[in-house]
Image (cartoon, rainbow over all chains, first blue to last red; front, side, top):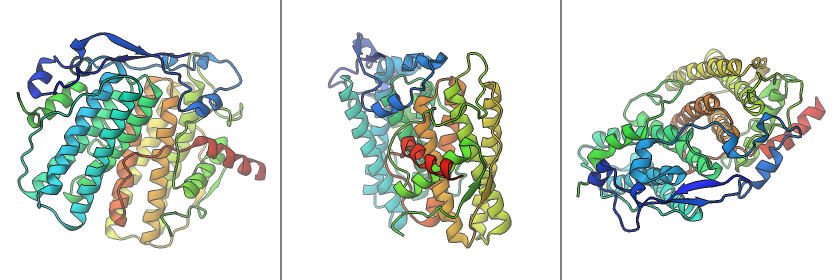
Length: 239
Length: 214
């Protein structure tokens, strides 16, 4: 029976701020691995039953630990704590940031018509991502980080669309960067599902600003925690 | 209409398991609007098909790759034939060229990974597509791209080896981008908050029908 280690989340009430992020003092320091046993069959039971071929091949290590995965991202662990919970809190922080960005964009009166409708739709998606990740963290007994304090400068409408596309590209690359590291199948499923949604957002926005829908070409490129956290620095308020 | 897209006009002729599976996947996509979450299983594949594994390689991964390859072959040919045979608007032509080129590269990438795993790429089935006008082209393109996203996302949790997972992740994001661009061109909602993963149990059930009938 596979077991998952979930790193403990950030201390309750602790805000992720730019400064803390840079110092890497959020989350991980609270320390302590909270081992949460998660039956791989739980939730996706039929899958695993059905996926069991008759022959006990070399893959009979059908536990998720039997699968080849990349090591956890050191920068994500440093900022958000160890394990899949650290990844989930990293993702949650990006989703908080995106959701708040679109909230401000929609409220800005910069847009109308189909563009406003798209931005609303994307913003609503990001809010659902926030809720889903928080719910997942709760399910596995890990704490969710609080929303970071953010600051966005919203200038001309076109610049806002460009920024939105950049943020979505970054988000999609961030998820892709963690996809090969996640251990828990439920976390992976959610991450994959959000990953493609972020890619879809990025492409939809790209069509509004006459940019290519596939900036990386035919195969999307992942981004490391280090790259992503550096890129979002300008949007996080220093405390 | 009701958001459902009729893919019954797409014919896939081929006796490989992957071809059957693909027909079934499209059928499920049509019925369910590409719904529900499950992952690929290996039981539906016969022992004979193109699933030879290098010692230490993953049979599950190879099966997933063969199915993905079949899907990419279908997509690549769809855009190629659309450009040659369909009456497309200028913007649809540009889209078909861009997406078609990506799909060809996906085919090459998957063949390479299959080779690394010690497999032999599945033979392309024969495809037939119903081409009428620009709107029909976009509609079917959307369905195919959504099927691609669902298939990869459904399969990924079962993937065992890193190169396969990384390739699938890099490809599926691009499929999602294609789908979104096509939806923008159609003026429909770009994406639900959570991309659907294809329910492969349903696919297998549907596949059984094709296998018996052929």
